[in-house]
Length: 489
Image 1 (cartoon, helix red, strand yellow):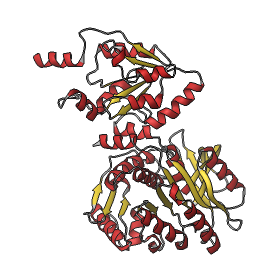
Image 2 (image 1 turned 90 degrees about the horizontal axis):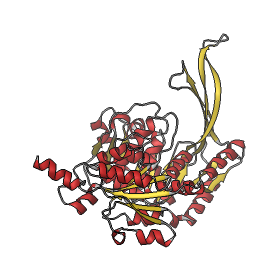
Image 3 (image 1 turned 135 degrees about the horizontal axis):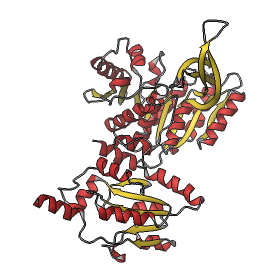
Image 4 (image 1 turned 135 degrees about the vertical axis):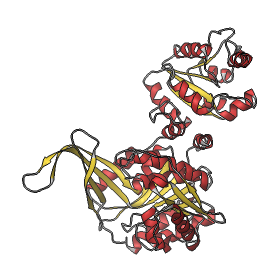
């Protein structure tokens, strides 16, 4: 069910994750493909803008940072202008780059993509130009980087390896990391290179090859789900992994877990615009989920959702936790459902601009006139209204086994449709006290059927100068009464 994935997202916290691998700079040149050149039978691109993003292992780090993790990036760059631009982007996103090594003998890897629009339609990639070295890093660089990583090891909840075959992920660097992770119980997840010697991954926690990579590694085709399950099991056993996960684009994922039967996880159909970055997103979300304590089947389900959202976008794009929740709730991707950590970050910026934050909460099981009146009055107390919404389990604990009438998906969708509601955050506990303590609203609002001493969080809000507002009560209108009347009718 989607509710358990939403619960996982809401309790992920801010894990610390190391991302090691081939660090790249992605450059995009956008323009209009208007005509065929007079010089040769090729399309002419009239460029309109240029954009630079983090790529490769740096892309995984960027995705994790957007999802609320503390990230350290380890890899090798050159001593050139592209390296400085990459480092600037890393800094801008709050990613720790203490383990980003400069090797003057190597260029910084750059992938330059040209994307053209024809007749103002959706942009399509026309050409990619790569600037790179595929030579393995030197023994001394690998040894120095390994020593530096191991000296700082205790700070990470998971280690992710993004191997694009550009020479950074050499066996002498990976072996001590895999061994240390195994001994300390820290998951080491690897997105392997397309064609290479997979023996360098022996003993890691899991690998995540795509369909083509898995077929190269196993030496047999992966054309259907049964073949994917077979190959996943083969890789898991031969490499002594806890799990092997084969990503299957539109067919979802195949998981082989030690001492379990291989399992297929389908994904719902998507409008695919660009598969670029899907593998990075899967690795990032798997790592985030595992760092947050999820088991492999749950982590795979969440990564399936994230990978699906990624292919709906052009180029490599980041996701927020709220977008994952919105997708799980089948709401529009830019809807009002937020993760708590994300909401705290958002309201800090709103406070700096002088906005007053209002909070109210409830089950909102069967929305009625009393709810609408209370929400309107709450919104009038400030600039931005946050609604804490009880999860299905929380409603059952409060109201009994027959409730809620409407599940979390429906209740969130209805609330999101109200103009006065600016943000929704789902909580699983009987009371919203932990939300109130985290959000520190300027105004706490409850309906008029509550007395001041009954309002959860009232003392806390007033302790830092906030205000409690009791909204007008509309007598005779309640969800319980509505249900009773419907049953009587």
